[in-house]
Length: 276
Image (cartoon, rainbow, N blue to C red; front, side, top):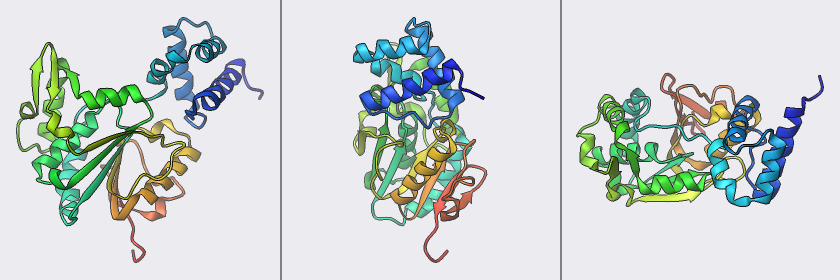
């Protein structure tokens, strides 16, 4: 069946972004890309994707705003609290055995997951020996993450998630409220490195004891999932841990045999050693 005009437009648009700006969305799940570009066309008042492409190529200043549509920016603190409880109760004891710990939050978006982990590690007494690497393809999202400011209207759900995750203190200890916003304590960022990094095109990122990449792989096609799984595999240290979103899995990737299903329900994996 021949490509529809829209499919051709999408192919050309994704190729244009890659060649002009070096952002590679070509292996993202096509249904998701089509939906997001449809929303972007409405926002930028373009009647079709070809018009959106022409507008972008002639006005590169619109790229940061467009990336907000192309990347996933939906998150909350301690999202899926049972996963954070499993991390706290079952993974943290292993991490305690390391004199220093490196944690990579891949696709950190606007920082909710980062602050969740920073708070959890502080509560477990591991913050001072941990470096957090918070990365995202979207530099505007990284700026929001670095600011650590969220609407107060979201705090009720954050607080409940923190409690259900096994939180050992009140979430209110970590932020101040002002002008309708919750401003998270800058001390939570003292061991954080923010970096622009693409899971699609960039190389292995350090040697980590824990990588979290939650609700990102579901937007990639199978080939790209395999490529990212390989990046994670080579970025993990000896028996390091990988935490995915509850709807994601390593099971169907080429690299599944290299990972032990440490907690199948909560999608926590552990890199196998050569002797496993």
